[in-house]
Amino acid sequence: MRRDAQPCGVAGHLSGLRGGGDRGARPAGAAAAITEFVIPTSGSGATGITVRANGALYFIGFYTNKIGWITTAGAITEFSIPTTASNPIDITAGPDGALWFTETNSIGRFVVEKNLFEFTDFVVPTRGGGPAGITAGPDGALWFVEYFGNKVGRITTAGIFSEIPIPTAGSEPTGITAGPDGALWFTETNANKIGRSTTPGVITEFVIPTPSSAPSRIAAGPDGALWFTEQQGGKIGRITTAGVITEFVIPTANSGPYGITAGPDGALWFVEQGGNKIGRITTAGVITEFSIPSAVNGLPTGITAGLDGALWFPESPANKIGRLQLPPTNSHDFNGDAKSDILFRNTGSPSSTVAMWLMNGGSILSSGSVATIPNSYSIIGQRDFDGDGDTDLLWRDTSGNLYMWFMNGLTISSSAALGNVPNTWTVMGTADMNGDGNGDILWQDSSGDVAIWFMNGSQISSSTILGTVPPSSNWSIVWATVGTILWKNTSADPYTYSVWLVNGSTTQSAGIGSVPSNWVVQGMGDFNGDGVPDILWRDSTAGTVAIWLLNSGGTVQSTATVNVVPTSSTWAINETGDYDGNGMSDILWVDGSGNVAIWFMNGATIASTANLGNVGTSWTVQAQSAE
Image (cartoon, rainbow, N blue to C red):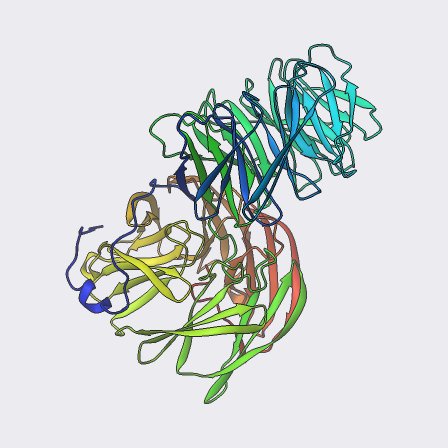
């Protein structure tokens, strides 16, 4: 497959609609984009990080004795802590709207509103206790652990303390979080245990199977369990509220996991101090890792999920705050509930009705008509172009005019005209290709030029040219999804397949194998929840369904047969989507009579199925660029 660096003709064809300049290069092969922001004061020793209810993010400067505020745009403001050399460690948002943080022998409270800010210090009763982790408790108080004092501490928002001794001497507690059972859960780094304290102060301890694992931080997971890092063990641990522990080995040796948090995607995210990476683990234990761009090991410490859908983390020696933007999981989630929905069109004459089913697993949460539009318009994309969490619609008419509908469930909240592009250019996909969370528009023209518009709502913020793949090469785009373009070469049977991993203007290609021509790509989706798109196949002769699970480098991790649905049955795969919101793609089927069904997937295994009903033969699922 040939990729020319700067093919002719693209600039002329797209003039007037394209933005100026290319995006900066991003790490090749990553499924999520990492941006870093330099902290103004050098040598800050950034550690803990938290998010307030208003979306503002705050972090600790250990060496500079400051609290930093970073906006989601990356602007940083620093506030000096009045107590000299207080050695702040961790920070959390309190139930009173203030920020609470741990210091050498105190608990600090920081109130910041508009241009006013105020610090208050509360001295911990145990002198030299060394408060470490801190969290908001279920009882309206703040809870913390004392690393040297070997205690669990509690402070009310009025500053009243109580302390609970930990049964194991010298346990060196480090992290603490509120559990789903109304108790506080904490790590005992030196004792190699996980502790549980009720709000009245009854402590139970659970031994970690791996000796000397050095448990560090802990967070409540979306599955009702607690998840923790094992800094020396190189593992992520999971403990149920009944005390049953499971451990998962991190692929990178000597990874040194430390901070951990629940992400907005139903997975847990953690930092690797030894590996200089950000890790993601699904509740099923599948781990994916993302390298941090800093040339030096940033020694990431804490991590938190921002209200912008990104993960934020401090890098201490690198003196930066990192932001990891998750790619959108569901390309056709119209009401922002993290579950894919189903878009239909009734192709009447001369106009047709657009309708949708808002899904909740195997149930239709609600349904209704959206609008009626002439048949000269086609839906060519379903993505969240403006970053509000709701999928939008991209339309194109037969003359090449482009339009966007910005959706809010069944309602068109606004619309915009993008302009005209000659019909020699075809939209090949609308996935996020630069990791900013917004859908982008992938183009290819009749001569083989490949280009991307990077979108910000209806505005083209910039564009890039990826190369030229002429039709004479027998290579063609089969599918495009988040950061990935799947290519097929039909010069000989079996056909050869390859992928481009796209990060802004940077691409990395990988060959993935050859497949007989009777096997046809049905779609791409993340079937095992590892954050990497996989390939769905069906044998057009026998009806066998199979999945290739890919890794983040674009190569095949494993292959498996799912099931056989004979082609004589008239059942056809219409699209993929995460209809139950569990982070794994599912398969939508429609038969020749209009019966609709879903296979809910767990990797290549059908976990369950659902029949959704019959829509007749005049309604068709709109699956174009609903990857």
